[in-house]
Amino acid sequence: MFKFFKNSSPQTSLHELDHLYGHTICKCPLQEQISYCKRLIERTEYQLQQSCPKKDSNRFKCLIDAAHKELQILNAKRVS
Image (tube, rainbow, N blue to C red):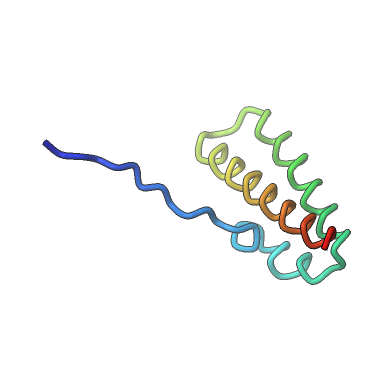
């Protein structure tokens, strides 16, 4: 009778999730931005492996996804 659709929200960018990146790091040279994203992914994956509340777990996963996407964008700029 009723159809329920999962409301998939649009992916949030790293600029929105990480204020340090959005206000400061994004103005740094390209290689520093790439290094920051890689370290952010490593740190966040480590925190995710530790026991943490589910709300933090979801935030960490979103942060990792956003950092991976930003890293892809930055690597594409580096190749160009």
